[in-house]
Length: 386
Ligand SMILES: [Zn+2]
Image (cartoon, rainbow, N blue to C red; front, side, top):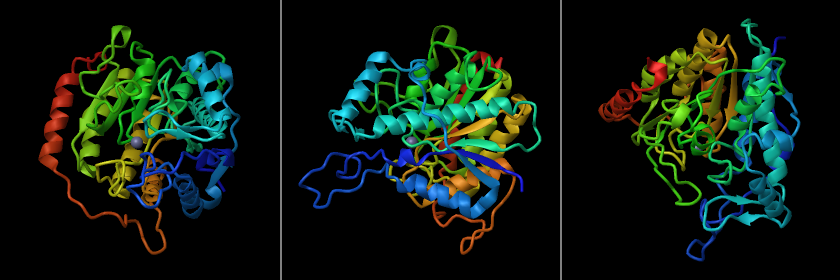
């Protein structure tokens, strides 16, 4: 039996639990029954069950080491890390007036989560040149990372897993036998990967491409980035941050066009040694934190395209890093779609076949194309397109 997927996972990631409230907001007497926070453990438990069901023995689980302090300091400010440790040691709670909360286990869970991402990146680099169907590394991270900035927790994220993985891959003393000179990060989570953008904004050794809802800045202090096409990088990094806001209702066709018109030419032009995906499947229909309608079939297409792109540009070096996805059932169907695409296998599920039980909305195709036209026109100025 061959192994198709190596899942970097440890049960300690279940110990993190943000406080209950009115959906993701603080508890209020206006709402009679406090609700479990949307970053609930069922999200990742369902993904694990789906992978077991769909792939069985062909999926192996490896427990990663927690990320070391030195690895964390490649991205995060020491003062911020000290604050995070202390906040958790004091029992956690909500950070000021934000939707982000912690418990006493969050720092340890986040370090394991970061370790999973770093291990997955190292695995992908070690497989370079072995383009023979070796196992796909997948970091099943919880908590997620892409909103965590060097000095702030933000958007249910504490340590920026994908940024830490990219930095580890670039480091000469990283987790792989070889290091990368250039890393491309594709962020298809429905929210802007503002923390990742912030970490690499003035650098050209990491290309950051993000498609997301046009949600803008959501906090003047903790989340000032807007994810607009005009946030394009600065200094050496100018043209290496490519934001692609998408209108509400963008679905399979729009995301396919995002790949065709932006991701594929940009990454081919950049020629990375490693591709990391900030794989949040919250662009699905019914996601309570998203606005888009991508189905299992759409995620399957994205999975197939990213694998093909990795083969063509990076000797197959590809790792998936789990980000968001909040409808706890759909997330598992959407994530299955990604794996079906990457592995080139369509799985027949009992009772569901190869379809998506959440498929019921149509996409505003003209509007999607108009927004994509704007992004393509703007991003032509990037060195990767020249
Ligand atoms: Zn998200």
